[in-house]
Length: 361
Image (tube, rainbow, N blue to C red; front, side):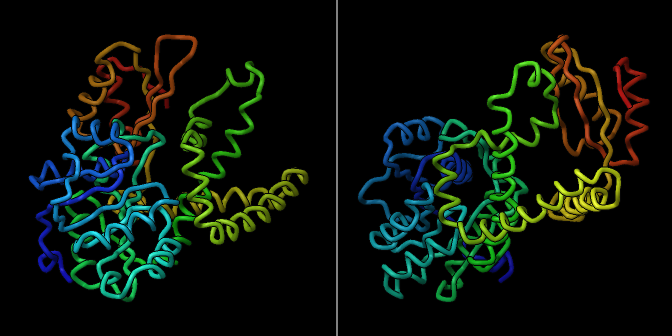
């Protein structure tokens, strides 16, 4: 089915769960002119999302074309079964685990309802939660897995894909079990690695923490996410996660032995595998990663300085692939790392220096 052949998503769209993901989807649909209705166990979440322009509270007379279930993992199956039973709509959920909810739903609904259910999962989010963290741009350019089962009707799958495209994301169809193995590798295991590293900081002496740089912030950022939510995610995908943790345990044993041995090829081989894994991560828009280089610029901690830096980079004609800011605790200056294509780095450095910026090579 090509994009031109997809069913038209015209609404109404019902969003069950007015948190970060649900409200972000609702904002997209509302801004496209669709009628959006919101359902949540928290009346405050619905009021907040409504105030943001994400839609209105659901009414008993609403007849949605599509229901999007965006609730915590432990509640997904119940919410999907409820939506299939009280509406004639296509139903998708955006939970981070797909096989377990599908099995639970399949055991509780008949074949005529099951054809209308198609799981999906946007690979977008934040360590922040709730409707106030929502954004209509949250999914721009992000991969969004669509995980139909053998009974899913083609029209139902097409309608979910239409939603993904309207949200600005890149649809990727996957088998539910394969999806769960993929997210265990690319999301759940990295989260646990961040948690373990961050846990070593909790009782660290203050003088140790004073040496924290951007590296430790990059590695530990996602560890700030909601523990209760992650308990549910990991519990629902425990088999795939445990397989990978076993592999990491073997790698850790090898790493400890290599470090203890000191100079030798073993440690270099392990570090080199890390280089290879980093290089394997897709670049922008899912394409191959392009060689990049970091350009470091000292930016005074004053209003407008960062915007001036970005403006200068734009006038120079260099596209910024990524940006990180490391604040100097001793001075009112931030060291801004601009990640650019390798071939553009020297030109950017020279041009920024000519405009009075202090750079570091």
